[in-house]
Image (cartoon, rainbow, N blue to C red; front, side):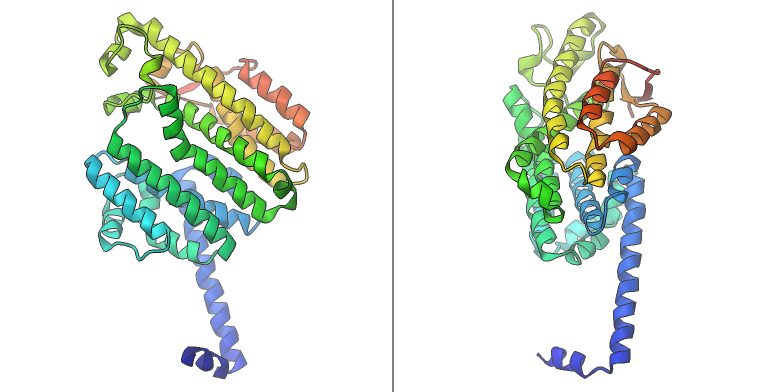
Length: 363
């Protein structure tokens, strides 16, 4: 109350200066996070920066929060129990608790050069920016990112042991399916048209997340294998393949590619739901549609380039930079049309106009 009285007693000119100073500080904070986003993912930065405000800031902050979670989950220098404890602490912070100094010390001092560590280094700024969002946006972001982070902690404790396709779907739900819920709820805050189809979009949004994560698993096979992990259900492995070494053995190349093909077919099934998700977004919400179209089309194309391609076992498949620009340009021009989306997805997913894929050796 005393503070309220003090503020009311301030001359109007001083209040205006304080307001202007606050706005400048907030702009500087958001500008910093723009640079962090671009450093962590140029691809997602393209879609996020094209969104209208305040959705743009909401999506940027949500994305960076999840990159911090990814950093903790994928960290190769920490033991499983330590990673899980830090993830639990991060989840408590997202819920609104006071950040644990040990968590902030670790995130701020990590020498890890990965893109995720860039977000980790800026954790205090990310938390501060979150607190400046609307109460409704904060509620959505805090709840969904917390749940995803807790799911990661559970899987870290369990270890990368995936027996069945249901296990794989459960893991992908925690790290990606919940992101579909998050995006849909943020869209709903900004668009009455999205709210109209909210129940169906929530279901399809989860499937969208599973589609992208299945592609990530295929792309990440070389790096995961180097760490001794194999995010492939044992149910998918033919007789004779039980270990990472078996999977990579020259004599099992055909069987391994059969497993990859099964994962790609699984991704294609999830992408059918992803296409339906985009088609339900209002046509006048062009920026939202483009935000979803870019990862959808890039994912469809990656599936095509990975199919019957033994290089996926030793290097990460990436789209050619010129093709990325071409796909992004066409999505901007024609993304309002559901018919075009269906036709173009079928075209790039079938191998038409297929330039050589770029491969990055596993690090």
